[in-house]
Image (cartoon, rainbow, N blue to C red; front, side):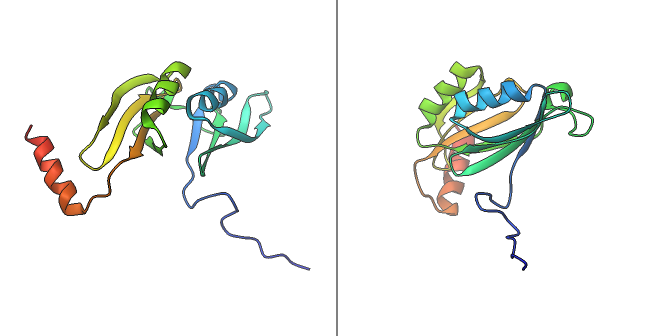
Length: 154
């Protein structure tokens, strides 16, 4: 008897970030403290590092592993990343403070933005950038355009 397997497993979305970090165990602890992540599971690598782990933040998952020849190099090793993770939260100000208290570095303090979000940015201790936001207003593309133009001319 064959069971039909779902192409996208329950609990996952179509896109799932996968982070490579120098110290997977420390990163898991940071994400728990900074963003309220729940650890779903972890698998140890041959040397005891994190071979693969999955965390839940809100209704989304992220995967991560410790840096290794198989997994690749971390943002720390590469001295930065062009990729940013956008995280919607109920209270961006409280989340921003919590992230700083957990060891993140402020890149942009939360502020009301022209596109209708209250928004700020932090860098985690592992070289990844997190954009934190709480949606405050539903705007049409035209209204966003007007506000963007006004913001650029200030």
